[in-house]
Length: 147
Image (cartoon, rainbow, N blue to C red; front, side, top):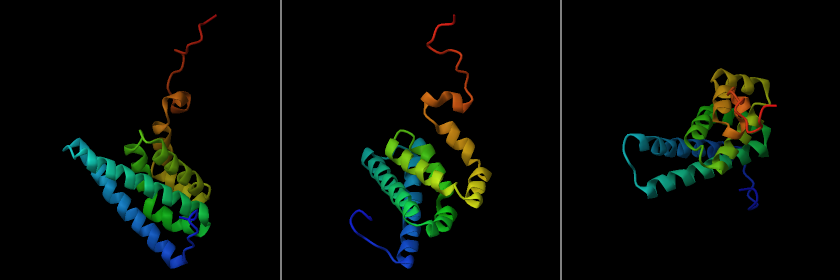
C-alpha cells in the first residue's frame, strides 16, 4: 500500500478499513467451515491469501496513523483474535495480527477492550510451544538433566 506510494484521504482510509474487515470476515468464515464440510484446496488457499493480505493491510493502517486505531479496534479486534486462532500455521498472518494487537493495546482504552474479550488469554494460549512457560505449562521435563 504505502510502499507503492499510495496516500489515502481519511474517508478512503475508513472505507479501506471497513472493506478489509468485511473481506476478512467472509474468508475467515470460509476457513472455519472446513471443519463441517471440505472446501476445495483452491478455496482454502484463496481464503488464506485474503486473510494474510487483510492482516497485512490492517497492520499497515495501524502503523500509519494512530487516528485509525479507534475504528480498527471497533471493527476488527475480535476478527483479529479469530484470525489468529484459525491461522496459527501461517506465521505471516499470525505475526501481522500480533503486531496489530500490540500496537492497539498500547492505549489504555483499547488494551482494556482486548483484555475484556479475553484477548490476552487467547494470545497466550496461541503462543508457539517454545514459549510454553508463558502458557503456564509445566516445563520441569526440560532436556537438562537434574543434578
